[in-house]
Image (tube, rainbow, N blue to C red):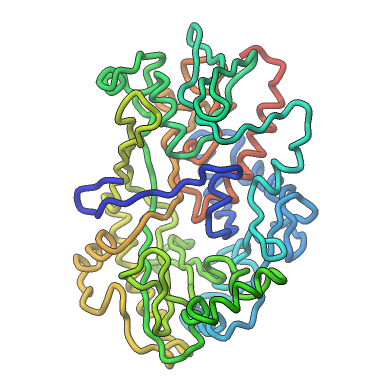
Length: 470
């Protein structure tokens, strides 16, 4: 990642079975129904509205809260709830209620004007339940499936503008050919990168890096949308903070407890509670999200070293950012990491919302019972007060949200990289893309659940025309 006014950073990817669902914070957030409806009404992505996506959500879930019109049970994906009762989490939820947020059992239900509560997570019996656990492993013995690991796809192979396979290096190096089609599911970074080094992208850029042109697609790698996350940290006057649970003899005890029966602090998700809220009371629905943590990270030991003194963290981010960035291959080699420019906070909407998030969090921590526990704000600190100073805190102290979308945008228009009807890459045959890169905008919040449901919908579309020559 490289922007002129933001410190350079490394973006984490899940380069393993299960992709980023194997390395994420395990939060299960579906997004708001209005977002999926906007895919169809605003972007012409027919067949991707809430009416089409909800059945896939419900079918894949085995939700601990039980089935209703929003949730499903009996599916392959385990969705569980944190155990209520932690004193500090309860205090954080109560403070939100006193600020006007509605406490709910399922924050994935109707958001109204703002909700707060415990977050569902993809954890089962104290263990991560990734998409590999839910979908891939049960299918591993099918005769038409072969799982290959420790292997890097270097290039998509074409013959007369038709994708005919891939070339790989690593443990299973070689060329893999297909009589049907190639389906690219490498993620918001790797999918556009692989398209570019394979000859699909902006002609001038491909010429500069020495890649022969297969299909001109200037928007491959463009429309990059990512939200910046700001963690505000506060010192508190009680050892209810979890900081000391991850240090010294308590850390050893908690590790042994987890190894013994998969319980305790080590069995928790990254953030067990959170909220959806409005940065402006005039808005019809939430435009921002909070994640609440009963611990704080030592700024000198980023990203995982915790402070010794007790504290809490409240992370805020914009649900539907409008700033657009780009990424592009540095060379013809897939092993050269791409150049990424997220262009955070370049849209006026995002700057206004970012300022609103900080001011909201400061009001939030002043609500009882948090107010009685609060000592002071340690990050970014009380000296960040003006709008300009708050925006500077976002740029200098914020981080990547790991929810990148848009770099292989789908749509019904000619500028879209893939066709929303069937996810085929425009201008070539036998090639589809299905991952976060196809979303033209960010579905509110975390992208794991939306992508699994949309992948199920994509499989339905692919199977419906599998007998058609493509």
